[in-house]
Length: 304
Length: 310
Image (cartoon, rainbow over all chains, first blue to last red; front, side, top):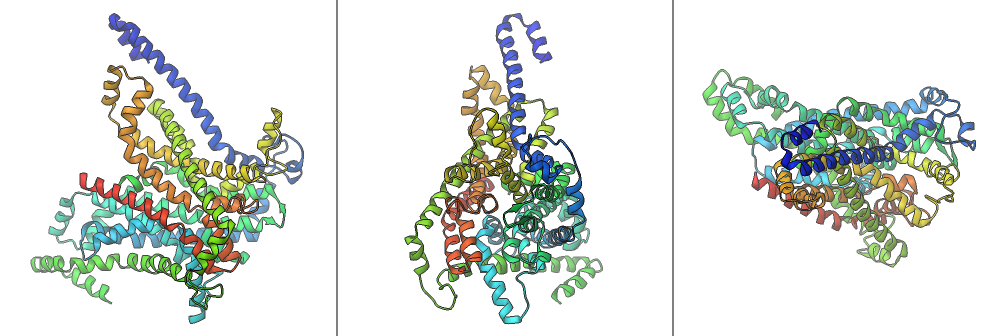
């Protein structure tokens, strides 16, 4: 704004024009802030309301007071949930599933992306396109055949897969690996070829080229893919809802919805506390690694 | 076994560098294939096979013992609920994507307008709905829409507007599921459009300003043509995800009232898992394929086009 004014001063002939422009800018800025505040209110209302409700007692929730204000804040919902064995089981299941799935995803997708971006083999171009197509196949198309496959597998081998939390370790990678591979292909492809040629001449094998050059150089992409894999496995709802039913086998999203809603009785204080605790890990990661998160988000469609 | 052999011979490479290098080049394709093998197995076993298997499942009877051909589809065509689901899925996906695109576009502009210093903060707050697991945030919406304790209705009552049956009435329920979907998805559009806005060269706007273009002309003749690609691909991505959406409808309305808000995914779940008729559920979910295929073809065309330009 100051520069615009300075320019106006130095060039009197153009004054009306520049003056109006700077006034336009100032108004545009004010309007921008005004609407941004409105949109932030719209976008943050549900999480804030989660927090408000989680601090209330059941009595206050059912009282006819202002629902947007906490008159008697209490942490009892948090204490109750964090000491409840079933909630801790859900949390543990979710954490174990997510961590294992993230590791599996990286172990599968990084070598595959390296092979697909640098070492051509028969059908590698088709496979790269196939990986991308797989990413577009939604889980809602696959859960019924998978359910039937697991049931058939049980008939053949007597190994029970349905209603076991670890079955999720097999199905979650189908959601995370294609995208992780796809963005890693993009990151690897942007590394100059001279770099791995130099490594090859220095006598490095393919494995060394991958671990000593590609992984360190493409580290931001690796972090973005890791965050993506974690967020997806933490948030996944359909597969655990379809494949697990017993209380000790549930992951967090399904656990909160099936166990805290008992019949028609909704204990909203606890449900909101559970939802907030369930939303916390992705939010914390996002708060600290926002730039990687956004890089991964935009890489999916813009890279490649 | 094969893996171990390769690794041992790789260790021997430095000793006889020249012939080792040549051999490594010859082996390249084998090593590459082995590196991609877990990916191929995963996709083959848990994506391609079940996808084809669901076509087979759709031709079986309820107990999955007898081949019934296309009877499941004929049965669906005769049911009124099926056509309602088709209609609702299309209304849901198209309306939600349009609103997400519009809101994302507007918000991206506002963020782009403010000084670069503050953009990070705004962007950070505006992306929160996308970060929270959809199942968790939909629960918050369910509570905001609660028939007797709705916090929205409490605010509306201050203005004398009567209680809105957010999830109780068919039309309001349809509105509510779309609203929640827009709330979750709009930040994604905002981020994509913001990235695209930043890549539009500032000179173009300066040139437009010199030519006397007003703000609308600047958007219509400069911003939109420059962002066309990213707008199209984001909308197509979102169309796929929205069309196949499950979490929001399942938690918010579970398809009700009287099946009015069911989309393909939730109805397939209702029939297949809760109703125990897996073939019928598989038939329903197969109806998602044509739309997904069309969107996928457009996305692939766009990506290969850009690949050629690069």
